[in-house]
View 1 (tube, rainbow, N blue to C red):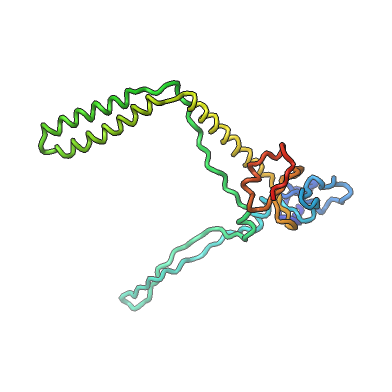
View 2: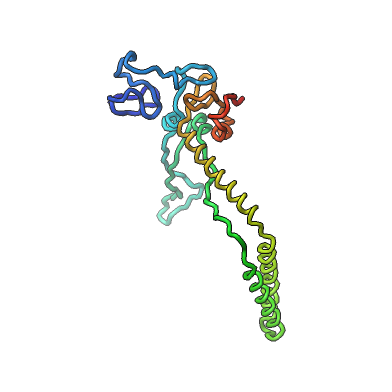
Length: 235
């Protein structure tokens, strides 16, 4: 199996390109392989210094393991010195790999809005508050507790009641639609990130066959940009 000159991965020698970073298979003559013009950096129009972001992160990240030596030292009865220690493991990446790592925003599926909100919960809590308030006069042992609980129930009841009274279905629907749109944008950004390449010459990221590129510090903006609707380069 050939080893990729770009990311060091091994793959089936029947492949013309590395499936991880799209570098040419060194065992296949160049004249039998289609040109890699689609991998050209939009900024410098060259292909010799580009590599897939996923391959860079994989090649420049390693697992580290070791033992943490605690500062606490104990002396046993037999005179033996004992140090506290614990095993640790993690990953270590180069500064370039760290700068290319993108953590997508968390996605939470929104609840579809209801036509109306019931005022019953708020009214029920206010009634309970009234009952507790009356109980505070009849039970001297727990008067303070009942009074405090009645105030809390009353406040929560008022909040629930006002929330139901001021509920606007149209606004709730607009908010719901905006949340769904945001989820789709995040999904598209994830898809863009999986296709992302990096140009070492210009320190810019880009998606193959796109007319746009961006510096690393604007990676998030680039992923969320509408690549297919504009040809402007992010500077």
